[in-house]
Length: 435
Ligand SMILES: O=P(O)(O)OC[C@H]1O[C@](O)(CO)[C@@H](O)[C@@H]1O
Image 1 (tube, rainbow, N blue to C red):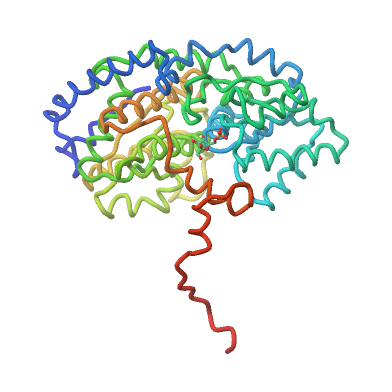
Image 2 (cartoon, rainbow, N blue to C red):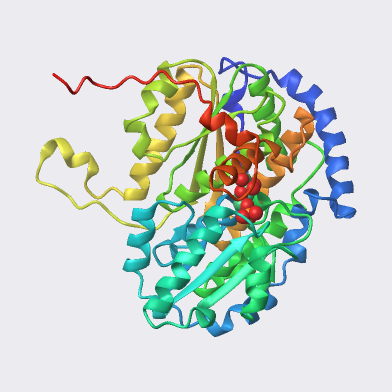
């Protein structure tokens, strides 16, 4: 993974960062790096995520999934960090269509998903770090009943990843389901390089060792300076720009197979850095598609964004055939990869020409090793940003209020938050149907 921050400098962008302030910021990056290394060495909560390339045991994953190796599909039942990592890895490695994700509680899509899958050839991976998440457990209870109704023994086709205790762990124990642990000290959104993110890819025959090796390359690339460490360069520049008004991070991968990666990044960035009244709002977009929907805003709208452009350098070859239409001659014999890269570079230049700060993130090609390095790099960038912003990067206390309110509404607990639902201020505007 390498990073080009040239278009974030104040010589080009507004807001922009001067090279002097980057050099001054580098002292803080060196101190933050020491802090991170100490956290890794002491296996501290959160920092332990940066040891996963070394601590995750791919053999244990292969052993656990061996009975499911005949699966045509792997259905992940999880939400947030318990789904987005697995979806990102499967998507990026080209098995996304065989690795659907149930990460919402929408009755229609749940029904459609369950009805569309050959349940006897489907493995179900239920993932929840807490083991209590209502959406995940609710979805799973529906899926297992559908399997039973279809005459499929769900205990033969289910594998669980969860914490050391909780209802999901109890259920797995009761039915002797194969169970792997969410690694100790690793928050969900930082757990992609563990069984949480790797099980579907392993069942579908992907090279998870190469993903971990890429993560390891990311580990060895950590260095106490933004001028030597791409991950820290990204994190530091994002923070510096946020401080100068770039409160939005439009994250734009130029590869369809990285669409879930943008969603994964959005959780990582929002849930880790959205604290104490700060935090860049991640916006997922896709290149070149969203050039035709969002770029007008990115170029001519407020100067309140960092635009992150991501691409694999090497792409598969597919050539646009020649055409008899003269105006389209320029497309003939052009690679589709050439076309999307021209769009990438033109968009990058168009943002610079409009003084809109943007950063280029590149990987060699979209393969297991580069993916592992990219995921690790973004996690390290996020942790570095958290150090510079001095926020509690690894928790997400603000999400608990809503969970209590919902459980109160469903009669599970007696929660004061639930009152706010019934006492909501109302000013409803509805069309007058009497006319
Ligand atoms: O893995 P769990 O405990 O089911 O949580 C799922 C997701 O929900 C959150 O706790 C937010 O509600 C995320 O941090 C987490 O990734």
